[in-house]
Amino acid sequence: MSQVLAQLLEQGFRLQPAGDKIIVSPRERVTPEVRDVILAHKHELLRELLTEQERERAAARVRERLARDPRITRAFEGRWRGDVYVLTLGVRDVGLCELAIPRERLTDPADYTRLLTALEGRA
Image (tube, rainbow, N blue to C red; front, side, top):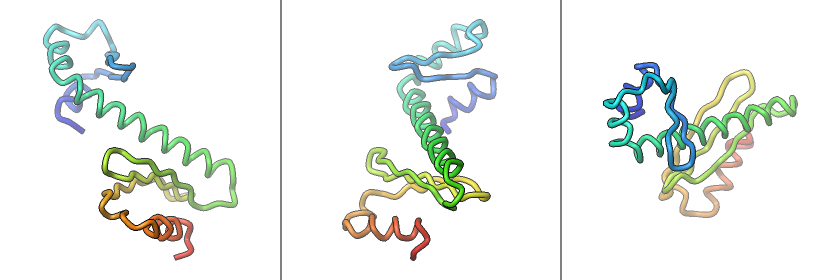
């Protein structure tokens, strides 16, 4: 988490991405100084907020898959974020984690098969 976002959260602000804008609450506590900081770091904050939103949505989908089918013990979802393949993995009664795999580690098409095989517990 960036220092700017951490400081805003510590001050009790809640930030949400909304298109190319950031909704800040509680609005009545936003001083001109806080507004200037947010504007100066807007792109960085938006990128970080959108990444966190994406992470939360992936985790929710993985949890839903586990809840929907009690026979499975693992569920996962993968997506590209720039040059990194991000894999959200949920293990029933254990928890969630996120793996970040650099693109250069997944150059051979067989890499995907090996990865899925390991995640499905057949490795």
